[in-house]
Length: 171
Image (cartoon, rainbow, N blue to C red; front, side, top):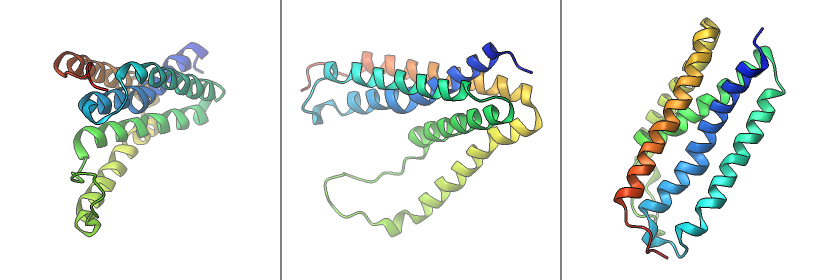
């Protein structure tokens, strides 16, 4: 049996990696790299995005902490797997859609890349579950380490964006 604090550490790291990837880093990165296209400043965005990310983290953590045993492991793995897939998609698998200016997209030309992405997602999504089935101790360490690593890598990228991009005078 795991003590509650070990479940809490695993739950918080998985939940924060999920929230940070989708609601904080993702939002900040999109704004900073496209600031000239927005009619509002970063000052109006950063706090709501941060609060949303923290609220989602808290909600997921509370939900996970209400669970125990195999059910806790399953849902924590689900959150972790979605986080991994989202991170890989955003950083490595995005197929160019061209300018999103209302011009019709030729979806038939994107069938190959979409199928490739789907297969990669399936593989990435399955790996944490496979690890869980074969080695629970390694699974816990993997979830904690990789979640923390994703948070740190994205934070380094965000710091780099803050330093290199001129977005403060946009609005």
